[in-house]
Amino acid sequence: MRDTFVRTLIDLAKANKNIELITGDLGFGVLKPFWEQLPDQFTDIGIAEQNMTTVAAGMALEGKTVFTYSIGNFPTLRCLEQIRNDCAYHHANVKIVCVGGGLVYGSLGMSHHATEDLAILRALPDVVVMAPADLVEAEEATRAIAAYPGTCYLRLGRGGEKRIHEKIDAFQIGKAIKVRNGKDIAIFSTGAIFEEVDEAREILKNRGYSPAVYTFPTVKPIDRDVINDCSEKFDLIVTCEEHNIVGGFGGAVAEIMAEKGNRKASLLRVGLNDTYASVVGNQKYLRDQYGLSACKIADKIEEKING
Image (cartoon, rainbow, N blue to C red; front, side):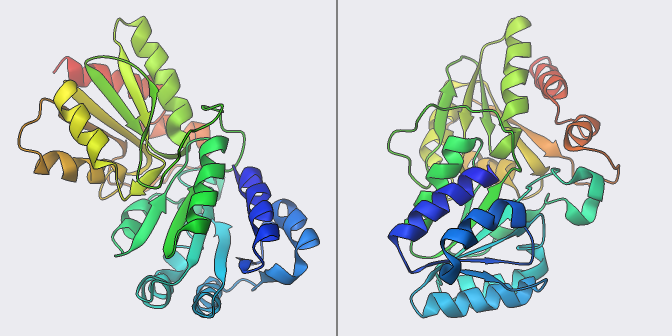
């Protein structure tokens, strides 16, 4: 995803000299093509993410479209007050990009895990929150937030994500995408956890179930129409996220379902169950440890179906 993001941003920045990229002293292997081709639109601010965000806000208020880039929690939780006060409050045209959402940097421990970011950023008024599931969604989301007038958060995986779409027609901020048809069960997914979700669907098919699957590249604004429609059509809606279930994507879906008076579906939220990932290991290992592997997602869904 990160390579796709950088390639897309280079194309956009070549066409628009007001686009700027700021990094917090990392990402050199990935960002090198940008600064080589567009040195006057690139700034390495150093290991100073709070300053990076304030500088980005100032540039944005002078007419620039500014992308800030760092890993895990560094561009979000480390500088939350600056995002709130300097960017969101002023509707500044700042795009906060996190590479390594969820448990990507698993072996570095919980300080590098981004597992509360969706909840915290979506709580800020006037901030768009996006978590694409594959390379195509990542490209479309990058183009969409570059054109969006205001503060946005883009949560990326690291690399090697499974390609879902050949192309997406009429991609829009705030719209979910149906990936698989099904009946009785609808699985909603956001971010790179989709690879586990799609495998879980195959496991469930082999057990005699037929889940529909939707990706939600936008967590805020959430697609109310799809949620309400599926609430009427399906017996069970399952949300999957590489994130704490408290306040995150599942929480956003729960809010919409709770407000809908006439609905058929019940809800199962799959994610980190109000805990930090205290175990150390790679992303695949941690997903399995915390119930986010394909097999464990399928088991949780079947257990919910069977009461």
